Image (cartoon, rainbow, N blue to C red; front, side):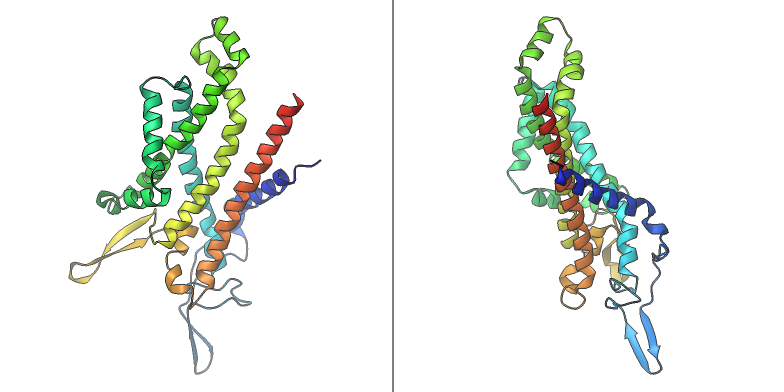
Length: 298
């Protein structure tokens, strides 16, 4: 029987990658993101942006008159890279910690448990809002990097704790105990026994976390909390925080204002994020079925 989830998830993910790499070069995409706020369709008639979906603008435009389809396609690369960078950094930190603490003893094991409990007490969106809105981050020139690191670290404890539990269960397997009896070093045990047996589950969890990070990025966008932003000084000492990127989350920043007047502005970026979340979730389920079937056949 074919693994439909793996096939569908792979196709959807490949479409995302193709859009990310080749999308801006498509002939119907305005990679310069130029726009017209005012149009004169006929003498004596004036139309102002945002313009609704039409033959000229398939998905409509934003308030600056920029083609929304072009914004979404051009923003695909930054959106996927942000999601991937956060998740990859999380696993680069969490998996080694989990493997080192597979015996569930020692300071690293205590640290993993403490970190997991610390951020499990609050929904991740609350923890993220509190940390990325720290004053020194709001005005930092390195805000982009700091936000990626902070969001990644928030759930390092959770990923490490789950992987540690799996590694601890594996440490009691007969072949691992045989390796210890034969004098295999701890590093050798990790390379020869732990990683090959834990890798399938790590890969599945990685794609699930990609979808969770995508959802989180979307939630932050709706709340007008941007990973890439800068503070612009206005008159009389006042200032305004503006986003400096076209990732999909930033397109959701004005959703509360546009949803009634120009529903297409938040709707299509939200649809793109939904497609991304589904892609990673379906692919993760397909990979899980693939690995389970392969294990059952061994």
